[in-house]
Image (cartoon, rainbow, N blue to C red; front, top):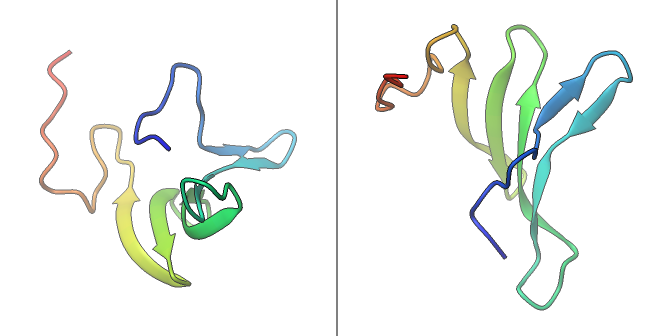
Length: 80
């Protein structure tokens, strides 16, 4: 198990091939079957990051406005 994204990992949609990439938790350390949590991008309306767990919406980052996610107010701006 990890809480780290590796270089070249992607999340979201390829609108040309209509392929979605999302992350799903494992059931347990010893069982890599799909768990209860998933992290994906909802492209209905403005795209936004969403976290679902136990069949419920747990977190929504809001849409990307070019600087930050509109629903994540505690994030600091990137100075680079």
